[in-house]
Amino acid sequence: MNREYFPILNEKVYGKPLVYLDNAATTQKPVSVINALSDYYLRINSNIHRGVHCLSQLATNEFEQTRETVRQYIHAGSTQEVIFTRGATESINLVASSFGNTYLHEGDEVIVSEMEHHSNIVPWQLACEHHGAKLRVLPFNDKGELIVSDLEQLITDRTKIVAVAHVSNSLGTVNPIEDIIRIAHSHNVPVLIDGAQAVAHCPVNVQALDCDFYCFSGHKMYAPMGIGVMYGKEHWLNEMQPYQGGGEMIKDVTFDKTTYNELPFKFEAGTPSVGDVIGLRKAIEYIQNIGLEKIAAHEQALLNYTTEKLAAIEGIRFIGEAAHKTGVISFLVGDIHPYDLGVLLDNQGVAVRTGHHCTQPVMTHFNIPGTVRASFALYNTFEEADMLTSAVVKAKQMLS
Ligand code: PLP
Image (cartoon, rainbow, N blue to C red; front, side):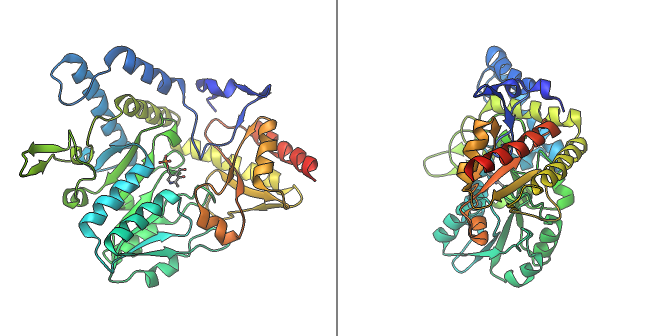
């Protein structure tokens, strides 16, 4: 689908056609996004918001238009709830720090799940350490599905927030976040959703979900690196302390006291990555032109096809067999180390990721050092799925 818009897919590695299956780490960029970056620097590069001159106003318009595009894409109620960050990691750190500073006290509790990316564990550990709070963990079963029924017991009157992934980056599981949000809210506990692996693969409606925070990165959805989004419900953002201090986030500064800017600027200290923000808009428009439903259906077909093909390989073991998955396949073959398998796949032009995928607790759960992970994007093909399968077969023969 639409491969001609991604020039990098024509590259050869070691003289072989590139089969790029590392999309959960980062996606490739369509020409419209690449052109938007050079166009920005060629025509309108300028600092935003504070300038009276023409270029500054043009850049500001483009920047703020992107905020509206993001708002529509995730169905937020207001652009005031859309905060630009450097990525999902910074978005979660922002919430853990600002929400933590405002609401976390000694003896309080934060719940994360066992399948979280380190980006949705460590910021909460830091916040808990800082405030004397405790981290509690919602487990998953051996298929890689969260045991949501445990949540009722985990939530106590000290629980201040639940933070959970929409989609697991190492298992591919799509979590029942509607149920998690409903249960947490019935105890008046807010919920942060890490949407890094979801926003490019399924429609997201933050108002219908009723989540309190939703965090994601641009570079996993065909946009440039260095740009991300933190959606937060307005009432939380109004109450929360700012994350960083500096220009843009203030209304008035004296040496005695500083008052803060209104939303969303209160959480956007300093000069943002304007070109990358504009690139994010082009990426969203690109996705919208194709249609998320169509993309999701294609990736689902690839997932089913590839899983079936790989399953025929003797000794293969899938890590993550949830009933509801996106296009992420984690696997091991016999006792071959995932790193060795990954290197031999790379030699054949097949780019996959190996290791713990920043989810060490997942690897601990299965008592494995890591996995080989193939992950799909809209431009992957069934031929590439076949090339992956034959590359695994060949690598297995070489290593046996
Ligand atoms: N959350 C999940 C589920 C991820 O897969 C990732 C990256 O792989 C992140 C968070 C962190 O994203 P970033 O490194 O773009 O900030």
